[in-house]
Length: 293
Image 1 (cartoon, rainbow, N blue to C red):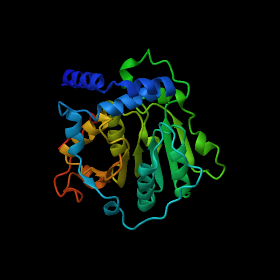
Image 2 (cartoon, rainbow, N blue to C red):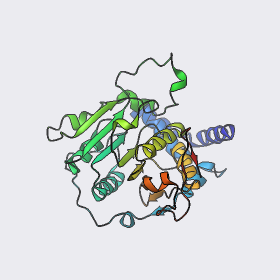
Image 3 (cartoon, rainbow, N blue to C red):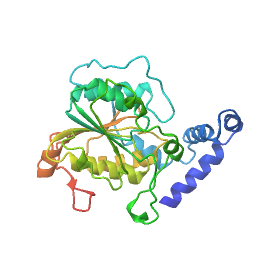
Image 4 (cartoon, rainbow, N blue to C red):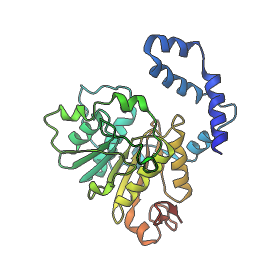
């Protein structure tokens, strides 16, 4: 199956390469051109790839249907999109969910510049916001290659100013920064977290790792997990979410966004009783960190 996926992507890449991409490479650099090329090839699907079926298996709902009431959120006039951050069409629904759920402890996977971290902290000043990203100086992993998972977005990793946005805001005093690789980091360090925002590496392996660790950290409590980049451009994310849905987790996409959401009843799932969210026998985590029904 992995060979088939690679062949499909190669065909898409060749078909998407055009003069416009070459011009962007000259004007704006190879990184920008590469992102446009990736976006273009996912618009071309003569083979109707698996990535589409994975995305289509995730039901889409309105933001309003996920909220108890329309919350007031804070986004100041200095916020601006930069490559690697969250666009407004995803940021506003994320903050709406955050304020609506009103958790006391939050864990964000993927700090980057800290723009989203800052706004989460400003919107929930009484909560503790844990955020985790790779150390700015990446360690030598040659001695432990089996411990680490395949990453992506290396151009973003190299361009990070870790947490700069919230660190430069003197009003933000409720953020705890963790400089760790989530492949080996213990999510229990964000003790009592009940709201998880997963926006780190977008490979299938990291999407699975970060999701399972969030579920385990929330065991015994009700919580909410939100994933960013649930779209055709990140098939690793959609593939993993499709597998979770097949295992009975009621994940939903928010219409008009790249966000996917799970409201998780950890107590019922751990107990193995009927899950109030799905109405069926709940899958749980086994000792190896994978899902089973």
